[in-house]
Length: 507
Image 1 (cartoon, rainbow, N blue to C red):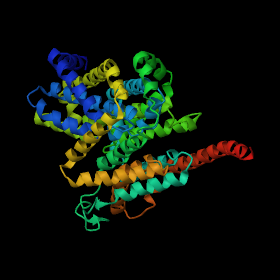
Image 2 (cartoon, rainbow, N blue to C red):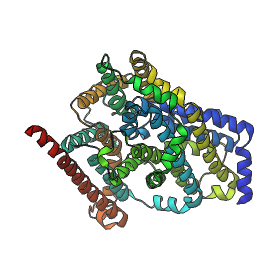
Image 3 (cartoon, one colour):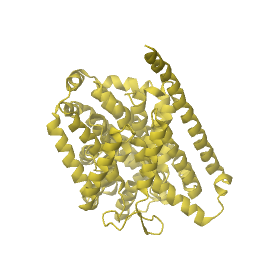
Image 4 (cartoon, one colour):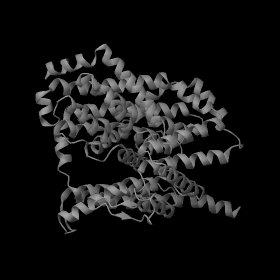
């Protein structure tokens, strides 16, 4: 084992490999920072460039893009309020208000350090506990997956603020949008109204860009001419010390470790991904906080939880791939394809037959996380200068990036029409004070819930199986408790706000 580890480390620490990894890290960060350009797209573009490299060198480069991409989405989420990737949706909830409050450097640094520690924690767990965690994940059937998604959907109740009804309406709208297009099991069109534009369905990235990016940009145009808070951001750009944030992140060890463990577990579930881990980690941080009402207003715990959760899925996703040959996400499937191109089989035999490669991947994950940290810290001032760009320049530039990202997804002009329409819907809901997060959550989780429900019922028509299978029953019970807890929290917040309102009415 030690010989294999040293052999793998020797290949990773070769000078040319480190240079390629550094380039990959920068590419991943930049690609993910552009709304619409996902980590998967960046990895796909990288794949052909690795065919001439050694297997470990090629995989190390793609891992650098992978790790950098999970952090890159933080940049636009914090500075523009637009999630660069689906896995940074929850990051916008507190990072953007913190940046708007005059602390963009702190918001970025919190996310970067949380991402670094999340990746390191997930890699340690990957090394130590890959086989048992993978075995647990692979034993979950459609019943457990459906129950897990039901539990995840209860997050809606904790993202609604003071208006439970508006949040639930937004969540139902999201679930409705998820049903447009072909049936996930039979492929039959639904709710398309015989429209060619709706026939392929609503791609999730189109909905994400439209709801968050387009509506946010419309709001920026509407606010143009009002008093700009840009001046409050400049001192933070110059004086902010990112190293001080490392201590601040480490002062929240429970939140950091809990969020990382959530990311590892979700990453080990095939098909779950960073978007679910991002939201679940944020939800658990809010529930565990003594001041949940501060979330959504620039709470550091929210930034730490969301970024540690989504970055930890990088290591978690490699668990089933390395141990069982089952990709945890689309990116892991591409990594598998890269190894197969080099004639290396992925699965239980990987560690036995190519131990140096497996341990080299573990070392590459640590090195990639360090490179991501160094690149982000050294480029922090450059990132923060985004806040110094006048709105009349940044709004059209970001709009162009959004349009290019939406078109590049499927190369369909019809997607641009959908982007505009969904952007108008998002802007309308935002203007009416409807929370957008429950809508996006419904779009993400709706198809997964439907697919697993139908698979479960096709396997066994008895619906009581959901309650007789132990893991499924535990998840459903947790979902029920989650709803009760969230409703109580909303009612408590209303009670707290009511005396102040009554006092004002009396005056």
